[in-house]
Length: 111
Image (cartoon, rainbow, N blue to C red; front, side, top):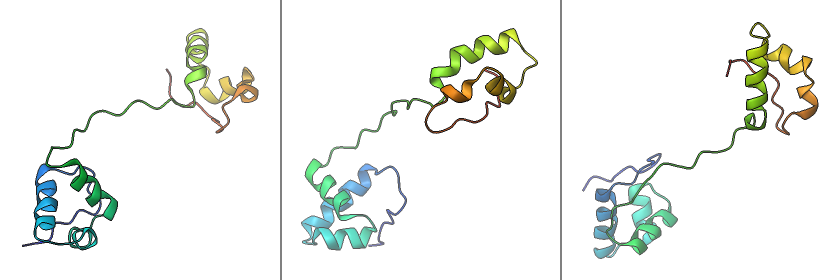
């Protein structure tokens, strides 16, 4: 049997789960299965615990952007002053005093 390379694999398919269960039935330990497949022991334990059901992957929730609190204000300003660049808008209106903690320094694209 050719070892399955799981390193860097983001999606575990049903065939990998079946292989994990098959190796366990053959008497291999969790550590031996992990070594053979190139996966972490916690991952192997997780799929042994969940059984032979196919993993259900779904879309992730959107993360808030640093610029979100300023978007509406920036849209209004860009509509009022279309020739004003993002950097000049940032300095002109004093957004630097209200900026997010991570430090948004420039707005390069129009909204």
